[in-house]
Length: 195
Image 1 (tube, rainbow, N blue to C red):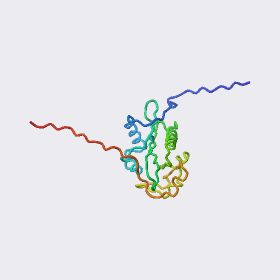
Image 2 (image 1 turned 135 degrees about the vertical axis):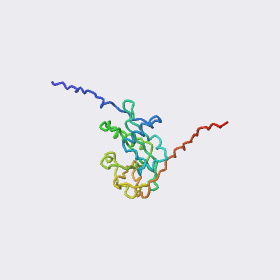
Image 3 (image 1 turned 120 degrees about the horizontal axis):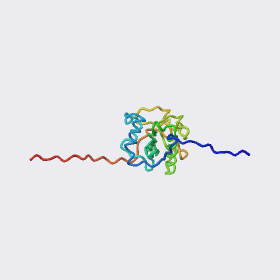
Image 4 (image 1 turned 120 degrees about the vertical axis):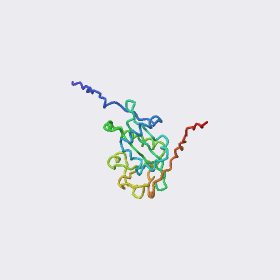
């Protein structure tokens, strides 16, 4: 009788685990640096950014991936109206280039979609590469008559329905509907009076 042994695997720093958790206020600087590194500093001018500007992400749908105490991934979802129907827009999804082979992006997607479904959302829309997002159930099947507030490639506008028929027959502009961020107060220094 031959005894089977479990092979011994040496863990390297590349195999360090990661955790996905709700985004925290302390993540902001690291998230913004990661997004700049992933999409360039001109990312604020992109079409989908117009759906996020001045808005808060959907409650419970802003996630961070952390590895060895460092933020290495982020994903957020936002409330929109897609041709008059409530939906979410996903993005941006970003992973630190040094960690891209660890499955962090896929794990962030799976957790974000599961959380959106659990919160009762009917559909999620995104602008991205169809071959990558198809494995999560996204397609361009129901987005052909939807528009974005700026230039975009039609074949990259994708959606997934959690409730059958949620996007049947939708047409028109995708517009933001989420909660507005509070206005920042400008604090001006007191000026000394000349005597």
